[in-house]
Image (cartoon, rainbow, N blue to C red):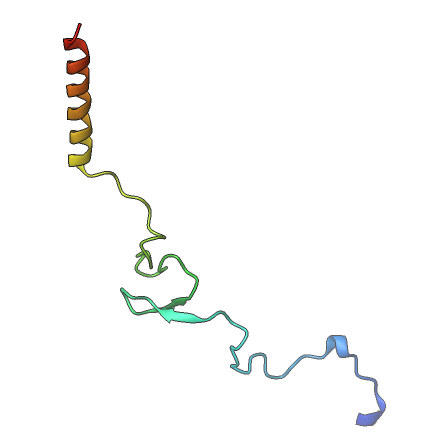
Length: 86
């Protein structure tokens, strides 16, 4: 059978070059501000060094000890003042 006489089945046709190296449809990347490795631009956290990229993305930390102590002292003074009046 000559080359030009057979039908090409487009569904079974494979590209001889699977990837041309054009990544224009991939997501944009930026360097991590901590480890400088390339990460996705929308990543809240670096998958390599595990640092949060912005303060808004980082989990809330516990309140400082002085805040808790001050609140307890104010509560104790309020209770003492309230029961001292009776």
